[in-house]
Amino acid sequence: MAAFVDIPTNTLREQTVRNEDIFCCLLFDAQNATLRVVDFRGGNLQQKQVYLEKIQVSERIRKVFTLIERDDIAGWQRAGYLREGVIPGYYKRSDAYIMGHIREPGWDANSVNEDSEERKEYLNEIRELAKEYAEIKTTGYKAESITEEETPEILRREHERRSAPARKPAAKTKAKAKAPAKTEDAPPPPPDFEVFPIQMPFGRDVEHYHYLCVNKRSGQANVYSAEYQDCFGNAKVTLYFDTFKTKTDIALACFGLNSFVKWLEDVGAVAIFSLVNADNKEMNAVYAACGFKQSGWLNRHVICDGEAKDQILWTLKLMP
Image (tube, rainbow, N blue to C red):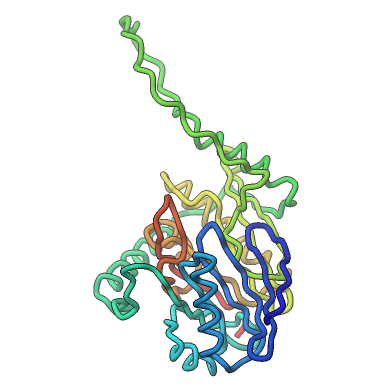
């Protein structure tokens, strides 16, 4: 029988499995019904896959994925996994390849076409938008690291700022009496920022960093986070407010992301990556405008509003 050791984490449940055939760490993401496998012992892939399929059924896991080195790709492919992306320099001196296995009704791995005209056209649209973003002036902003304790209150204030109704200009003439406005449903309550994770957890044995970018004139802000793995020098970054209405929003996002990348490089990061919902064209364009390269497309990787969605992988290697 396998030996299990449960370690509570933020939103990931970590479980170590060790027996004669298998030695790995399982990272369960209940929110997205995914499982990441951190494999400590190569080989025995058929036995591993039989075991993982049982776990998928018992834990109601939609998708299993793992990060491996190049030499292990063929074996995982034979076990039924698709290569979905690569993170250059993830292991500092070597790249990490993301392999995914989806178990859902109606899912057909053979239907995935990385070179489809539709996907190529969409990625080209992102690149063209990124060119426009790169030309927007980014002056009048300041960026700095913030503590984990400061982050919830900053998020709460900025959420209230962005949720507030826009002010209407004062009328030039005396307004006529109007009928009472129709009552509308109250807006949904804001997230509980004390417990709300700023990013979707990805790894184990990580440090968390938080970063703030502010428009010095208006006070508008955006917040960033990084999940940093010191042993390899990789960092998964997330930008919290990911919808943009104006060029100022774009400039703020780009200035903050570029500043955060430099800050992480000073900390020791050599590889930075992010996962962005594929249908958020503007957010994807921000990463492209900041020099990130599109190096993967993760199928049905996240649950948003009850629906499984694809994510695009953006990577930046800081060392040659």
